[in-house]
Image 1 (cartoon, rainbow, N blue to C red):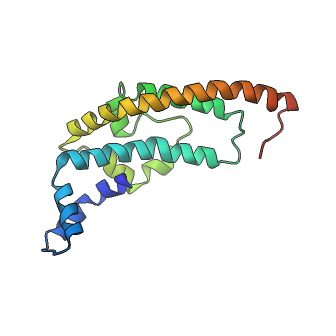
Image 2 (cartoon, rainbow, N blue to C red):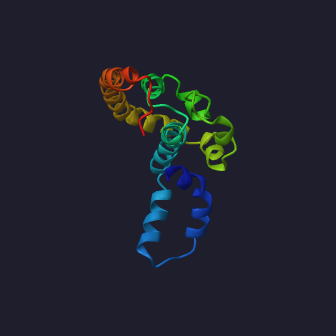
Length: 166
């Protein structure tokens, strides 16, 4: 959603230049004038495209067995812990998880807009630093949950001759 908002920001600004009596449109016009707000949209859009969408696609993939997901979650934890150290590559779309469909991502006009240089990219980095606090909490939670899941998978899945759980 935020990535789409960032993608059409110029068109929204052009449309909102017209006088409107609608208070919602006035509020959107005001939000678009605040660089920090738009930078936050770009940062959330990058997180969405590079993490959330890719993770959902992996989860919905019927060819990924539940026992494989532990390795994927371990990779996700490492990625989330290190994404700020790789913020330049992240903002260019070059720091990706192994299961990301890069060709699909690169063909997206929204992704192209998100990874293009922007005059307020320093504010995007600041937003990512704020989000990094939240991301580290999510990373710790995933790590804790996935370590418990290994025990469950070991006794419930692997001991049953690697039977698929539907």
